[in-house]
Image (cartoon, rainbow, N blue to C red):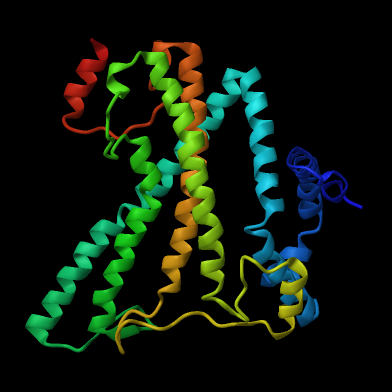
Length: 315
């Protein structure tokens, strides 16, 4: 009998049983990757098809399960406790998480330029050459109807929104409704930031993940997995499992890879959750170290005249 079954008679028992069991679950998952990653070609080797299907169903189940939540929560607790002891370690976590957000955002922000260039090319090809299809490629040409390329612009826009959200947060580019924030003291601001990251950002990200995860897989495989399915139920469904990637567009010749929007939703949620942790750590450290640490190690993009900024920093 597991700890959850033994201690699950009340809410506190259930919580701490899952938390303790999370360390075992993490170790078991790391030591037995084939049980949940065998559906990947470079891991499965020559495993029977039945076991590969069951492995995929385990991956789908655990991706939004109570067990996975407590594994992530346990890692957060361990890292946070170490960070409370060592400011240097916590600053390192902040720099890694914010650096990751900046790196992803700076890469996918170029989708905006690509979107503009593609729109110009579509208009030019339609108005000047009156073509019905556009093809790109070297050696192997990828050809689609003009309406497909036009509708694909939505995907570029979604990439910017979903993958640049935390980059914009780090850069301070989000609109903020300020009712009392500017009028309170420095430490009160840091407390508001800490509470806001844990009580608003984290729960919103978790709820979005729970819905987005199964929403994604319902458009990739059949039989459709459900959030209410138990692991045993999904393993039973694995007998009839097959890939059924969504390729239905809004128009006959339009963009037909809308499953990518579901992938972006999941990626967006993961980025927001990581940034919530980074923001909590930064706010705590700035609260602990005082005003001199405000903006410490913050990697913001330079705006305006670089020379003027350099002179301002020297002074």
